[in-house]
Image (cartoon, rainbow, N blue to C red; front, side, top):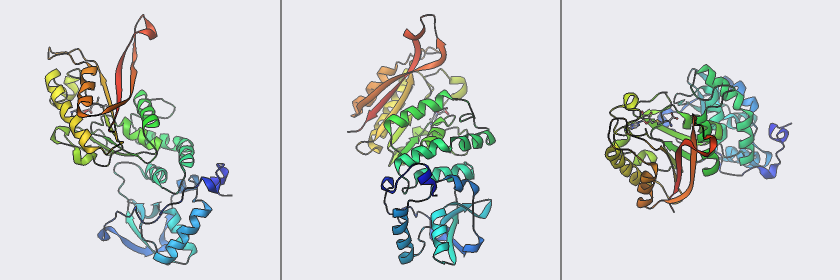
Length: 342
Ligand SMILES: C[S@@+](CC[C@H](N)C(=O)[O-])C[C@H]1O[C@@H](n2cnc3c(N)ncnc32)[C@H](O)[C@@H]1O
């Protein structure tokens, strides 16, 4: 029985789409070809639902007519092992195609298992509900990978409040396959939350903590990097609170410096987003450590409004371990502002 059937899916829940065509972003020089007999599948593929029957039919017809247009992606450490392209491989095999185009996957710091799961969650031939179920089903595998990579976030059995916070933002304010940009990614909580939630993610930081975060100083502009984003997640340092940890990065100064930088950030975010695009801006009120001027989150909120953003929602996210004798009615928290370009 097909796994998608075991998951309780019906063919009507499958989405039809141009499965082969649009995703081929490989350059001809990186493509190679070899005998289909040489390939094998990674074992984690057995946990990923197969393509639905009605979608498979048009997929097969497309391959018969055009051949395999998009190369399968293979493991950089074992070029026989397919990480992305199981359906192409299986159909080609059944159709008696002898050679398969392939290229080495760019893992961007994630493991082969994470790459397979991420590719499956971004594939258009699975329905939204299938992807949601898949994300839940495969969470143990992701956690195991996180253990292996010794990631701060996503540890087995532990709930990392930073990741949970990002999951909530993604759940309520993005859709599956949306592109999320985090230009100040820090400990990579956004990257991990996107992995769990099936969102595509591009993360940057002036001091990258992991291989899947690219180095970039946001003050040098990030409009191009944010192009095409559905959500820009901004979690800058809070004033000069962490000056010893992040010192000299521009976002760790006093109210004037931070205000100026954030004004620029708000403007660039507005320009980079298309209509409907969103910003999640996280900020905690900060009493200056060095007498540089206190920074109040509502003042920064206004910077975004002044650029033209509408407010979609405002959250207060309590700091872990910061409750005081007055308990739940008075607790230190940061604000999460969700803005939308309308
Ligand atoms: C509050 S932390 C982000 C926390 C992160 N969301 C997490 O979960 O770990 C702020 C991050 O901004 C980065 N940062 C500071 N100035 C920057 C700059 N000019 N360009 C890019 N990143 C910067 C710091 O290196 C730090 O990792």
